[in-house]
Length: 213
Image 1 (tube, rainbow, N blue to C red):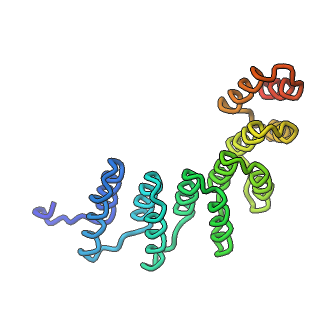
Image 2: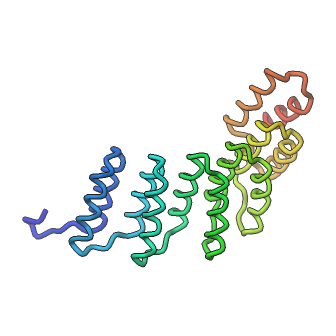
Image 3: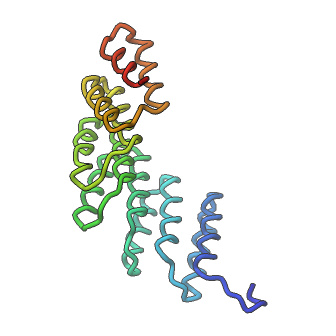
């Protein structure tokens, strides 16, 4: 490339970093980052998002958070994608309450969540048995100018079902259906499993019938 008078730009380097990260070769990815800086090319948000996501997937949150802080020190403003990556990483490690704290912190700094932010947190809270916290969070979605989607409803409904909050699940299913959405395969599977163990429960039977229509 250099022989033709062409030089790699940040897009080229980001592609290379992504390739290293996809293979789990983080040393190679960091070497490329150092090369970028040595050539006086500024990394962008996408550069850091790639690296932060890779470290989160490897459950190395300390390094991911270090890179997050480094972004700010270099004058880069983290995007909602950056925050969603970190929230997912925290939830992946079972740190859903820490994720919730981080969520409120970034909100306080003026960063607006999107529906992916909420779905990530709802999933993490439900998985770690904080369903009441998840329900409280769910109620704030519309207050922030967002509309729950099909996936949003299904996440919180599954959380209610697994924690035996059947009345809450019923209300959410009614609201979901009123919004024109339906249960997905994962929610239907949870209901079927519960019916196998509690076949005589009329609430579950009614729920299952609602989900089929």
